[in-house]
Length: 262
Image 1: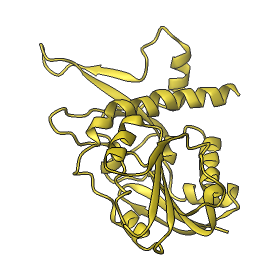
Image 2 (image 1 turned 90 degrees about the vertical axis):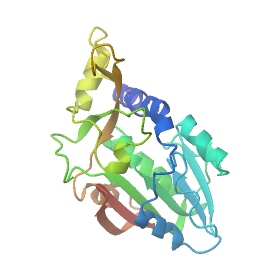
Image 3 (image 1 turned 90 degrees about the horizontal axis):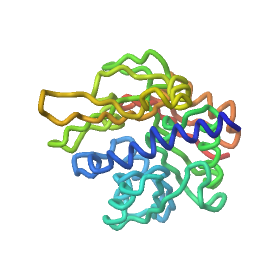
């Protein structure tokens, strides 16, 4: 139970709070939908009902007018933006979705599962999405890959500094497949230890001075579990018997799995 409490606190501090702060940098027309996700949505039957779990600012909610889409997320500022664009969205926790069993024809989970800090929570989140999917329905899951050309990760559980440039509202780790800053990532176990020790610096913030007289840049540190090749498919095959993996591939520095509810 203590481990569960620590995991959920870590996600509040290093996922939810970070997204709340960096949300303004996402509300930018330059963030384009990834082609394979777009195609997944376009291939659905007209009249399908689709959930985008962790929809953020709703960048996939405008694709395919022929299907009805519901988005949800834990980040209020991003949801506000999606709502302002006319999308159907709500705030909720991915481990307890407010939807009936089997009510969706398809579910999207793009760049979400890698923010859950234990294997058990990752399994629970996927199981919960599978519960809302009807038999024969498909789920598409994207997670950050450990195997990236432009960056080497020393370990799988990391904190990524997020250092937005105020003059150009771009730059999310999700989008570019790598963090903006080369600063070393700290492991999750270190963060849980240092949260317990109140005298150390809080690991959520790093202050870097640019030039004398300039304001310091506060680096938000976001938690990620980067997935090894085959890990996501194995997680589903070994723990979520109601899903059958159909495709698995590498795309935009992410591993993707498409699975069907059986």
